[in-house]
Image (tube, rainbow, N blue to C red):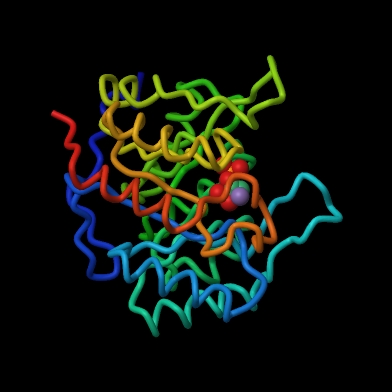
Length: 262
Ligand code: PEP
Ligand code: MN
Protein backbone atom coordinates (compact mmCIF):
# COMPACT_ATOMS: atom_id res chain seq x y z
CA UNK A 1 0.00 0.00 0.00
CA UNK A 2 1.27 3.43 -0.86
CA UNK A 3 -0.17 5.00 2.28
CA UNK A 4 2.07 2.88 4.49
CA UNK A 5 4.98 4.96 3.31
CA UNK A 6 3.40 8.24 4.24
CA UNK A 7 5.09 10.04 7.06
CA UNK A 8 2.98 12.82 8.51
CA UNK A 9 4.51 16.09 9.57
CA UNK A 10 5.37 15.59 13.21
CA UNK A 11 5.37 19.22 14.06
CA UNK A 12 2.20 21.06 13.37
CA UNK A 13 1.98 24.76 14.11
CA UNK A 14 -1.40 26.27 13.52
CA UNK A 15 -1.93 29.99 13.88
CA UNK A 16 1.11 30.16 16.20
CA UNK A 17 -0.27 27.35 18.32
CA UNK A 18 2.25 24.56 18.49
CA UNK A 19 0.17 21.40 18.57
CA UNK A 20 1.32 19.31 21.46
CA UNK A 21 0.26 15.81 20.49
CA UNK A 22 1.12 14.62 23.97
CA UNK A 23 -1.57 16.89 25.38
CA UNK A 24 -3.90 15.98 22.46
CA UNK A 25 -5.69 18.14 19.94
CA UNK A 26 -8.94 19.01 21.66
CA UNK A 27 -11.53 20.73 19.48
CA UNK A 28 -14.95 21.74 20.79
CA UNK A 29 -17.90 23.88 19.84
CA UNK A 30 -21.40 23.75 18.43
CA UNK A 31 -22.52 21.78 15.42
CA UNK A 32 -23.68 25.06 13.94
CA UNK A 33 -24.83 28.43 15.28
CA UNK A 34 -27.59 30.92 14.73
CA UNK A 35 -25.98 34.19 15.80
CA UNK A 36 -22.71 35.88 16.67
CA UNK A 37 -23.78 36.19 20.30
CA UNK A 38 -24.39 32.45 20.65
CA UNK A 39 -21.06 31.61 19.01
CA UNK A 40 -19.15 34.14 21.11
CA UNK A 41 -20.64 32.86 24.35
CA UNK A 42 -19.64 29.27 23.54
CA UNK A 43 -16.15 30.25 22.35
CA UNK A 44 -15.59 32.35 25.47
CA UNK A 45 -16.47 29.41 27.74
CA UNK A 46 -14.16 27.12 25.78
CA UNK A 47 -11.28 29.55 25.92
CA UNK A 48 -11.70 29.86 29.68
CA UNK A 49 -11.16 26.11 29.84
CA UNK A 50 -7.95 26.24 27.83
CA UNK A 51 -9.49 25.01 24.57
CA UNK A 52 -7.76 26.72 21.66
CA UNK A 53 -9.65 25.13 18.78
CA UNK A 54 -13.24 26.12 18.09
CA UNK A 55 -15.37 23.96 15.81
CA UNK A 56 -18.59 25.33 14.31
CA UNK A 57 -20.25 24.74 10.98
CA UNK A 58 -21.35 27.53 8.65
CA UNK A 59 -21.91 25.33 5.60
CA UNK A 60 -23.95 22.41 6.83
CA UNK A 61 -24.61 19.36 4.70
CA UNK A 62 -27.95 18.30 6.15
CA UNK A 63 -29.76 15.10 5.26
CA UNK A 64 -33.02 17.01 5.16
CA UNK A 65 -33.07 19.93 2.69
CA UNK A 66 -35.64 21.68 4.89
CA UNK A 67 -33.30 21.73 7.91
CA UNK A 68 -31.21 24.79 8.78
CA UNK A 69 -28.23 24.84 6.40
CA UNK A 70 -25.93 27.12 8.41
CA UNK A 71 -25.22 30.83 8.07
CA UNK A 72 -22.92 30.34 5.08
CA UNK A 73 -20.51 33.15 4.22
CA UNK A 74 -21.95 35.33 6.95
CA UNK A 75 -21.19 32.54 9.43
CA UNK A 76 -17.58 32.29 8.26
CA UNK A 77 -17.20 36.06 8.82
CA UNK A 78 -18.46 35.55 12.39
CA UNK A 79 -15.97 32.75 12.94
CA UNK A 80 -13.14 34.95 11.67
CA UNK A 81 -14.22 37.73 14.00
CA UNK A 82 -14.12 35.31 16.95
CA UNK A 83 -10.70 34.14 15.82
CA UNK A 84 -9.48 37.72 16.06
CA UNK A 85 -11.27 38.71 19.23
CA UNK A 86 -10.53 35.62 21.29
CA UNK A 87 -7.38 34.51 19.52
CA UNK A 88 -8.71 31.02 18.88
CA UNK A 89 -8.11 28.64 15.99
CA UNK A 90 -11.08 27.95 13.77
CA UNK A 91 -12.03 24.48 12.56
CA UNK A 92 -14.88 24.49 10.08
CA UNK A 93 -16.21 22.40 7.23
CA UNK A 94 -15.87 23.64 3.66
CA UNK A 95 -18.00 21.90 1.10
CA UNK A 96 -17.09 23.32 -2.32
CA UNK A 97 -13.96 24.19 -4.25
CA UNK A 98 -14.94 27.86 -4.36
CA UNK A 99 -15.29 27.97 -0.56
CA UNK A 100 -11.82 26.43 -0.29
CA UNK A 101 -10.35 29.02 -2.66
CA UNK A 102 -12.00 31.79 -0.69
CA UNK A 103 -11.36 30.72 2.90
CA UNK A 104 -8.45 28.24 3.04
CA UNK A 105 -5.95 30.92 4.03
CA UNK A 106 -8.21 32.39 6.68
CA UNK A 107 -9.33 29.43 8.73
CA UNK A 108 -6.98 27.19 10.68
CA UNK A 109 -8.18 23.65 9.99
CA UNK A 110 -10.41 22.77 7.05
CA UNK A 111 -12.85 20.03 7.88
CA UNK A 112 -13.79 17.65 5.08
CA UNK A 113 -17.02 16.02 6.15
CA UNK A 114 -17.93 12.37 6.06
CA UNK A 115 -20.20 12.93 3.06
CA UNK A 116 -17.35 14.46 1.07
CA UNK A 117 -14.63 11.93 1.78
CA UNK A 118 -15.21 10.50 -1.68
CA UNK A 119 -15.33 13.92 -3.37
CA UNK A 120 -11.95 13.63 -5.07
CA UNK A 121 -12.02 17.01 -6.79
CA UNK A 122 -12.63 18.63 -3.40
CA UNK A 123 -9.77 16.61 -1.90
CA UNK A 124 -7.45 17.72 -4.67
CA UNK A 125 -8.47 21.31 -4.13
CA UNK A 126 -7.76 21.18 -0.40
CA UNK A 127 -4.50 19.40 -1.21
CA UNK A 128 -3.34 22.49 -3.11
CA UNK A 129 -3.59 24.63 0.02
CA UNK A 130 -1.23 24.71 3.00
CA UNK A 131 -4.00 24.63 5.57
CA UNK A 132 -4.22 21.55 7.81
CA UNK A 133 -7.11 19.27 6.90
CA UNK A 134 -9.32 17.25 9.20
CA UNK A 135 -10.46 14.36 7.04
CA UNK A 136 -13.56 12.68 8.42
CA UNK A 137 -14.02 9.04 7.59
CA UNK A 138 -16.84 8.35 5.15
CA UNK A 139 -19.59 6.65 7.14
CA UNK A 140 -19.28 3.50 5.05
CA UNK A 141 -15.63 3.82 4.11
CA UNK A 142 -13.09 1.06 4.59
CA UNK A 143 -9.76 1.99 6.12
CA UNK A 144 -8.15 1.64 2.71
CA UNK A 145 -10.61 4.04 1.05
CA UNK A 146 -10.10 6.52 3.88
CA UNK A 147 -6.30 6.43 3.66
CA UNK A 148 -6.38 6.74 -0.10
CA UNK A 149 -8.64 9.79 0.28
CA UNK A 150 -5.94 11.25 2.54
CA UNK A 151 -3.44 10.42 -0.12
CA UNK A 152 -5.36 12.52 -2.66
CA UNK A 153 -4.61 15.47 -0.37
CA UNK A 154 -0.97 14.51 0.18
CA UNK A 155 -0.37 14.01 -3.51
CA UNK A 156 -1.17 17.66 -4.22
CA UNK A 157 1.40 18.78 -1.67
CA UNK A 158 -0.53 19.33 1.55
CA UNK A 159 1.01 16.99 4.12
CA UNK A 160 -0.96 18.16 7.13
CA UNK A 161 -3.79 15.68 7.13
CA UNK A 162 -5.40 14.60 10.37
CA UNK A 163 -7.81 11.66 10.17
CA UNK A 164 -11.04 11.73 12.12
CA UNK A 165 -13.01 8.61 13.06
CA UNK A 166 -16.65 9.72 13.35
CA UNK A 167 -18.52 6.44 13.44
CA UNK A 168 -19.57 4.07 10.71
CA UNK A 169 -23.08 3.44 9.54
CA UNK A 170 -25.19 1.47 11.95
CA UNK A 171 -27.24 -1.00 9.96
CA UNK A 172 -28.19 -3.11 12.94
CA UNK A 173 -30.12 -0.87 15.29
CA UNK A 174 -31.37 2.69 15.37
CA UNK A 175 -30.62 3.43 19.01
CA UNK A 176 -27.29 4.98 18.14
CA UNK A 177 -26.64 7.21 15.17
CA UNK A 178 -23.47 5.40 14.07
CA UNK A 179 -21.01 2.96 15.60
CA UNK A 180 -17.74 4.33 16.91
CA UNK A 181 -15.07 2.18 15.32
CA UNK A 182 -12.60 2.44 18.13
CA UNK A 183 -10.45 -0.20 16.44
CA UNK A 184 -9.61 2.41 13.84
CA UNK A 185 -7.28 4.01 16.40
CA UNK A 186 -4.87 1.07 16.88
CA UNK A 187 -5.23 0.20 13.19
CA UNK A 188 -4.13 3.66 12.09
CA UNK A 189 -1.36 3.75 14.68
CA UNK A 190 -0.06 0.35 13.70
CA UNK A 191 -0.27 0.63 9.93
CA UNK A 192 0.17 4.28 8.98
CA UNK A 193 1.86 7.46 10.12
CA UNK A 194 -1.34 9.47 10.25
CA UNK A 195 -2.63 11.30 13.27
CA UNK A 196 -6.12 10.23 14.24
CA UNK A 197 -8.66 12.09 16.33
CA UNK A 198 -12.16 10.94 17.29
CA UNK A 199 -15.58 12.55 17.01
CA UNK A 200 -17.67 10.79 19.67
CA UNK A 201 -20.63 13.11 19.02
CA UNK A 202 -21.52 12.03 15.49
CA UNK A 203 -20.46 8.48 16.27
CA UNK A 204 -22.93 7.94 19.08
CA UNK A 205 -25.61 10.55 18.46
CA UNK A 206 -26.32 10.57 22.21
CA UNK A 207 -24.88 13.18 24.56
CA UNK A 208 -24.80 10.76 27.50
CA UNK A 209 -22.40 8.50 25.58
CA UNK A 210 -19.93 11.23 24.65
CA UNK A 211 -17.98 11.30 27.93
CA UNK A 212 -17.36 7.55 28.03
CA UNK A 213 -16.57 7.32 24.32
CA UNK A 214 -14.13 10.23 24.63
CA UNK A 215 -12.36 8.54 27.53
CA UNK A 216 -12.32 5.19 25.71
CA UNK A 217 -10.78 6.85 22.66
CA UNK A 218 -8.08 8.50 24.77
CA UNK A 219 -7.35 5.16 26.43
CA UNK A 220 -7.08 3.57 22.98
CA UNK A 221 -4.42 6.11 22.04
CA UNK A 222 -6.16 8.66 19.81
CA UNK A 223 -4.41 11.99 19.11
CA UNK A 224 -7.36 14.16 19.99
CA UNK A 225 -11.10 14.71 20.09
CA UNK A 226 -13.63 16.90 18.33
CA UNK A 227 -16.71 17.31 20.48
CA UNK A 228 -20.01 19.10 19.90
CA UNK A 229 -20.41 21.37 22.89
CA UNK A 230 -22.85 24.12 23.85
CA UNK A 231 -23.46 26.11 27.07
CA UNK A 232 -27.08 24.99 26.70
CA UNK A 233 -27.37 21.95 24.40
CA UNK A 234 -31.15 22.39 24.29
CA UNK A 235 -30.62 25.65 22.39
CA UNK A 236 -28.53 23.98 19.66
CA UNK A 237 -29.99 24.46 16.23
CA UNK A 238 -28.54 21.20 15.03
CA UNK A 239 -27.59 17.89 16.69
CA UNK A 240 -28.74 18.93 20.15
CA UNK A 241 -29.30 15.31 21.22
CA UNK A 242 -25.58 14.60 20.87
CA UNK A 243 -24.26 17.94 22.13
CA UNK A 244 -22.66 17.99 25.58
CA UNK A 245 -22.76 20.78 28.16
CA UNK A 246 -19.74 22.48 29.70
CA UNK A 247 -19.74 20.36 32.87
CA UNK A 248 -19.37 17.22 30.79
CA UNK A 249 -16.62 18.85 28.76
CA UNK A 250 -14.81 19.68 32.02
CA UNK A 251 -14.86 16.01 32.98
CA UNK A 252 -13.34 15.01 29.64
CA UNK A 253 -10.67 17.71 29.89
CA UNK A 254 -9.70 16.63 33.37
CA UNK A 255 -9.54 12.96 32.33
CA UNK A 256 -7.26 13.95 29.47
CA UNK A 257 -4.95 15.79 31.88
CA UNK A 258 -4.68 12.77 34.16
CA UNK A 259 -4.53 9.94 31.65
CA UNK A 260 -1.60 9.51 29.33
CA UNK A 261 -1.41 6.64 26.85
CA UNK A 262 1.88 4.81 27.14
C1 PEP B 1 -19.83 17.82 11.66
O1 PEP B 1 -18.80 17.56 12.28
O2 PEP B 1 -20.43 18.89 11.79
C2 PEP B 1 -20.38 16.84 10.71
C3 PEP B 1 -21.36 17.15 9.89
O3 PEP B 1 -19.81 15.63 10.78
P1 PEP B 1 -19.77 14.44 9.73
O4 PEP B 1 -19.25 15.00 8.45
O5 PEP B 1 -18.83 13.47 10.39
O6 PEP B 1 -21.17 13.90 9.62
MN1 MN C 1 -23.25 17.94 13.96
